[in-house]
Amino acid sequence: MTEKLYYKDAYLTSFHTYVKEIEEDHRGPYAVLEATAFYPTGGGQPHDTGTLNGTAVVDVEDIDGEIRHYLAAALSSEQTAVHGVVDEQRRHDHRQQHSGQHIVSAIFHDDYQIPTTSFHLGADTVTIDLDTPQLSEAVLKEAEAKINKVIRADYPIDTKWMTVEEANTYPLRKSLSVEGDVRLVIIPEIDYSGCGGTHPASTAEVAAVKFLGWTKNKGQVRLEFVCGDRVLEQLASKHQIIQGVKQLISRPEGKLVEELTSLIQSDKEKEKKIAALEEQLLSFEAAELADAHSGDEVIVKVFQDRSIKDLQALAQAVLTKTSDHRVVFVSEQEEQLQFVLARGEALEGNMNEAAKQVMPLIEGKGGGRPHFVQGGGRRLMAGEAFAEKVKEQLLTPAE
Image (cartoon, rainbow, N blue to C red; front, side):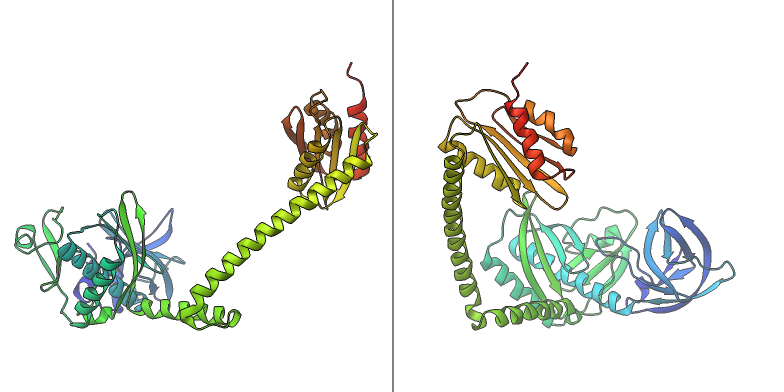
């Protein structure tokens, strides 16, 4: 068994040891050491990173009791002694986040009778699942204040190995599901939990906790928060965003939400007005087309870069003004031709049949209802030529 130095000293980030094994699996090359300060993924906490003899350690996993240090490149078989360096900033961050989670879960458990069912320490935020259907703003505000008060009180954080029987003499937040010895993380009067993660010497190192919000997840609440240095990172990020918004909207910070709400509402009203005007324009365009082709059996029109949605809307608008016309609309685009074929209610015939005859000309695809078809394909011919082929097909008597 590899000696787990991270349990002896959570602040140890440099160590010397010997290589027991150099192997490779589907994840890549790895080394097994006689002793290690690298924490492997487990218990909701991600693995450490760093270097072994200058080679990057990209992953650390405990596989069947064997701690494997996955490397960016394989170590030489001649390297029997190694110098390991753990990324100190990442370790410090994980200590802050994991211990902050213990305090958060303890407060919700003891003061609100809401147990934690799962924990995840992500790259940017921490989440816990709380066994409750919802959380009120009042509870969140009160709980956050209690948590930060515990952090500022500078409680010691201790870890002890003991038997399960001994551990059960403590007021555990969660019952133990292991046999043999267990590692208990103790924050006196606050939290007593079986845990294999890395933790600081006191709650003061956690520095602060800030809730970011919650969502519903499988009948429970998933609470998102940050601890320690991540609080400052969140503050800096949000401050940068606010400063950017203030460059666009010259209002005090306290008025930004009000101003943005007003702008969004105004924008929605403008969109409604634009949509109504576009509908009117479409109606005028449809009337002009119907009048201009009143003596024709087929109304043909080729457009440039007009969307299929516009073609469909225009065709429908035309057929509300005339029931005894067929419509062929084609849109020329850079590399495509798109089309709409439609007929009025007074006419018979399946427009799908006409479309099937002309789509091979543009290697196209399409379909629809007997009276209204849309499709498109490659621009293998001019839009006018394609439209004339469609018109010929529509005017050719069925055999």
